[in-house]
Length: 218
Image 1 (cartoon, rainbow, N blue to C red):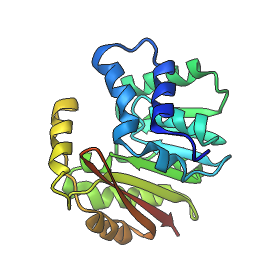
Image 2 (cartoon, rainbow, N blue to C red):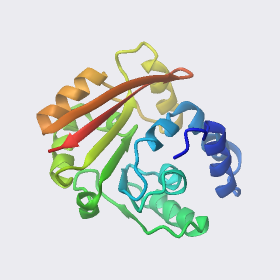
Image 3 (tube, rainbow, N blue to C red):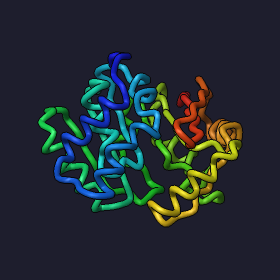
Image 4 (tube, rainbow, N blue to C red):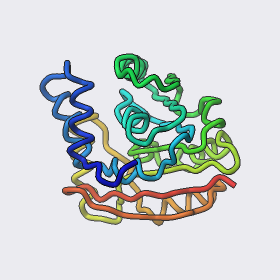
């Protein structure tokens, strides 16, 4: 992906695909590239890679992967049937011509296609997993991935006081209270599950304290 691509470019593209969206939905689509480090995440993908997005929602990030990172195949899973229908329609209307597969899952048993992917994304999903289930969730994901694959895990850093802005965000948008943990805590959980830490980075966008872990599946 070209380093010259900006958050504005990503926002404009999403708005052009979602030209029927109105009101709050259009606002969320338009402004997420400004509060989530999508560009940084897209730069972590090599052209032609098979990529899977867990918790893909309506498929906006998957669409950006297909359009800007030039993935060879894109898959996604979400617990919501409605959102998966949206993702399928989004890709059908995008005319990108990329092979894709979106499916509903129960949040525990990961689709088999995860095991055929080179890179797996988990973006702002982990803090929705109840604390008692977090280590088991990562272990199940490790088991589902193939050796040599990479997990890109982006979440909100509980070590920052700004975490409370994200808690307010989740309360308003999804009517949930998140279970954010610090980057260090998540690294420990991931290593217990069998992952190897490749890199760790942090970035604040507006009042959202992000961290991104690249985790290898040995």
